[in-house]
Structure formats: structure tokens, C-alpha cells
Image (tube, rainbow, N blue to C red; front, side, top):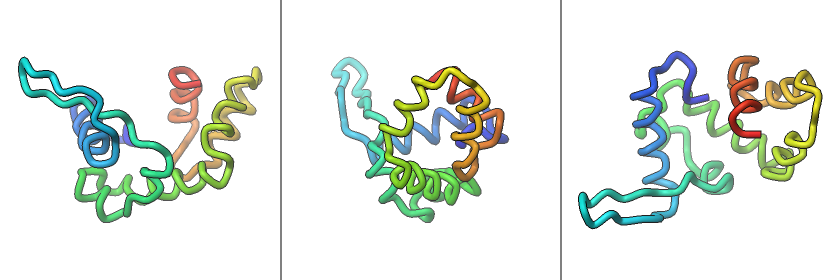
Length: 116
């Protein structure tokens, strides 16, 4: 969802802000004072408001992130996604993912390729 009409630098910045805001601090690198945060849990992401995501730089993507995180919770969260990992038919996977708000065929294919 974050990648639509976006470049890699901006996507990285958006996700860095999201992790810092909603994730858990994992590492503090004393050499350069860099902090590394986990990606937020689904419940943390679903509790974030559209306005806060806009403030973090998500722009028009903010309502899609909010709605999709809520949809994922309703579908079973990580269990839903883990079930998709077992699916062998890519059209079934694409259909399941494109039911999520803001997920089109290209994003669904990327999720299937890199995340499932």
C-alpha cells in the first residue's frame, strides 16, 4: 500500500517513521546512536488513526492502511496470511489479497512473492 505512486527513498522514510511510532525498539547502536525498531503489530497498526498516519507522511494512503489493518484483523490476522502461504494457486492468493482495501493486483503479487 505504501509503494503505490512512490519511490524507494520515500517508502523507506514512511516505514521508518511508522516503525519508530508504533514498533518496539530493538537495538540502540552506540557507535552512531542509531535506533532500530520492529515493524508494528497488527493491533498497533489497527489502533493508529488516519490523521496520525497522515502526519507520518502517508498522505492519501493513510485510510487504506487503517482499513486494511482492520480488515486483516477481521479475517484472522496472521493466521489468514499464514494460510495463504500454504495456498499453491496464485490466482487464489491474488483474489484473497485484493479484497483488502488499497491492494491491487501488483501489490498482491509483490506481497505473495516477497512475504508469503
